[in-house]
Image (cartoon, rainbow, N blue to C red; front, side):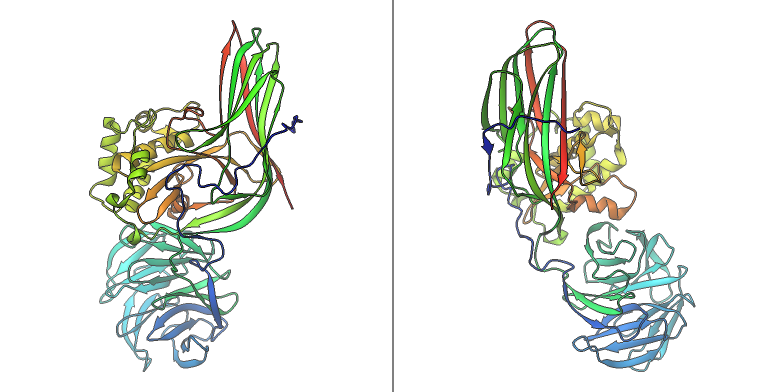
Length: 551
């Protein structure tokens, strides 16, 4: 429904300011154009038309090809064929390089082979503990193994094929594995992603896009990743880590109009009506491409001022007096255009600092208690102790809390925002309640946390939103602020859970960043309302964000 509103003559522009949340809002190391994980650095033609496995061994790329049943070594600089071996099976798949052998799995025979790379002689033959083995990776001592239909990744003893332990498959498919000395990289051709997985915990840290549409192998050359693509028949070198902390890519250019309407059915008038609008400022998820313009309609006498709360949140305060009853409406809002971005963060856990390295101003502001948090409550303290245990790395502390929230809360939009201890005891909550519980547990554990509120572009480019969304940002030492969406991440898939821990889709225009109660917005986001009635009044508020695509 398109409302026609009278455009208020004053335009509001706050460009080039820091993040809304105030102290420490810089997202350090962000980049739009610099090299980031997944960026293509170059490519070669594969030595055959059906590459199904890839590994790096002593300065050479080895490629398995299931059409020719060969294992081929190529020069990574020129693509020239250096050596070609006959595969010991008839459906060659994954490859990985060990100390002595070129390890290889064959889907046809269901076996693991250890092959001498110079002679081509097979020195080790093992029965695979999974059906249709498709990928494997050498850790320096053991082999990680994946089967075509298996939902688990297995760590296998190469001496006899015994399974040592298993972790959950991160996505829908496993089409390549490699180990970089610390992390396991898992390629998924159905999602066109490569997942960075902690092999000890089995949790996905983040994902990077594949350079092609049918990845069939991935390997690590000591600095960069290489991938084999079955569709393009290319071997492509991509960035693993160049120190960039986040990357954003443009996706949508939209006009958005946020409207708040109050209808007073009366019969008595409102002696005073205060309407507070949170105003979008700078955030990695968007760039404003036009001035943000305030508008209003109805209500009679009004005063307008711009204020800032203790969290650094900018607010437009409209105060109306003597708003009559009988169904009279008052409308305020803002309008702008914005370019929305897909933002991916790269929080390498081993690079995260210790809690004592967090700046004092951040700790003082974002470790404080609040009415919705109650971080000293027995439920919060007990939950943190169970969730965190002896973990000391702030990243993994937060991931443990994230996992605990998902085990103890399910999504339910029932109205109202209960305090964190109540939400945990009840076992259900809205996006705001998920956020309150997560923030409370993080703060109790010593991890600074705040919430973010936004209007949401839902599916269609021409759309409206009257539900909105709130999530969390945590501060990690030596990294900065990292988005965490506890309610969106409450999924069965490990890949989807991780995606909500370090990734924002191009669907949000952030209006609010706050650490807790505000003098103007209280515990709300986007807007807040207060009124005083002379007698008996029935007041009905409504808020809506309307989206229109821009060329």
